[in-house]
Image (cartoon, rainbow, N blue to C red; front, side, top):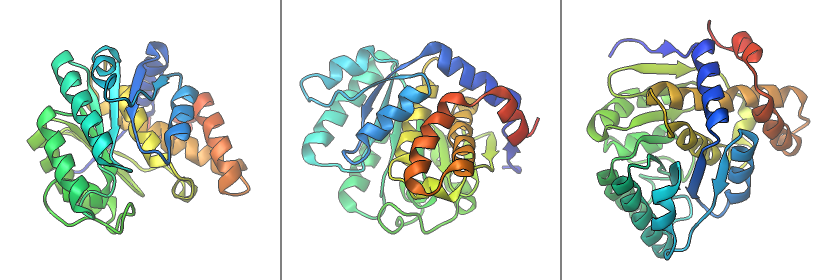
Length: 268
């Protein structure tokens, strides 16, 4: 594959406006550590989060939601059962769903389970470099939830995974790379404080899921979600005194991100 193409400000502005106008209903089966923060991120971005987790309800809700976000961060047998019910219902109903393969490769149970989920055709997969390399079957994962590889080292794995699954794959890091197996976009924004607040990556995956709802081009939709979080992180860091105030400022920046800001921080 040729070199990556930077996401443009005009395309990002279009996709962000589309998500805000649609206000998608995002069904989140996420980890217990990040549930409130993920809901707040989605609300700040104009989406409607729903944390429906009961095994008795997930299939019915996944079938009527705009999109489904699956995160295996605190996976146990009960959640695994709920996730399988939800993704099966989503696949049958045509509801796009996104996988966040947290710590895949580092732990056997979640690794095997995440590979099982790929049979249900996710619309998108968002993870760090080690997770994407492991999910592609090309490595053994990182240090728990932390990547031990740079995002540039995972590009070939992301391309291979996208081609095998049909999903758009976003590998995030110092530079985010997003591919559908044929095209490759990049987003070179962000700030180190995004790694100092729990839930920023998980909530990004939920935002990627939101962007899949009704997306005419899933590649640009996912890349724009990555830019939305990365640029909001840059803005939040400019006024934050540390991780605590950064988390609050991030929500404000996500809500207020506008086209002029995108034009200043992304290529034309």
